[in-house]
Image (cartoon, rainbow, N blue to C red; front, side, top):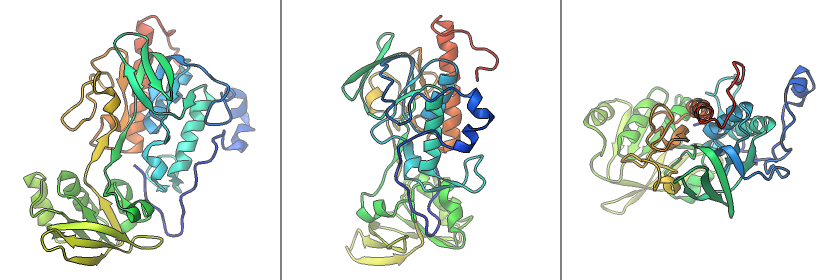
Length: 363
């Protein structure tokens, strides 16, 4: 959902979160914005456990929902997870999010999202949801040993890319290792890249990367693809794409950036090295839906099923972001989803007589 490192850049640690852009705060904006609920991510002085809306997830979808819900005076509680911020927290340079012509680091972008949500009164707790009970209102959610209750819920838990599980793959993530060609392909203009996988995702990623890379090597551990016939034909017929059948990636090479991969022939066991400037892992995504499966409808791939844009089969429970969207998987589309879910939740609460009618300027 973001983009990889440019040469020489490093991933920052995630700092204590405070209101940023102090110069702006000292101007006219300071007189029109409410004071933040807290100066850190823990919202230490806000111990609320009941709210009109509880948001699960703190990526672009969840925090955008929190911004809109807070501005509508819904006083949202965001259960953000022990690893808050979503996939942008493992992304370095993001160049495709509007409003940042010079790009922005993924963690910095999420810091801004979070600070803005807290500015308008969102309570954010960095714990994982362990179980939920959606049998009646208020809906109940347990996280970090605490019970939270919401008259409505927005599920924005996202989806996690599946990885190969190699130590160097993790170390070089954002430094040549990626799981999103749409996000990071631009950085490989004129370079050679490898793509791991054999389904439609891998075939689509490989084909997309031909717009930038000079050579795209498809690495598949079997002797035939699992993807659709049209995607197979498109990849196999492309002059920039070559295929290594019966090939498993056993290591990623490189010190500061990817320089190659170590491969093993799954038939003979022979190991070889392949020089490459980037490695795209395209073996699928796992939607973070386990805790909701007993209550909400999921499709064959495990993603939540939405009704009427953001709704679910349970009135008052809404969905936003990659936890249902396995087509776009972009920060900007997730943020748009968060906006829609918050507006839908506010209008639903209004219809139930729980929230006051929004004014024309509430959003």
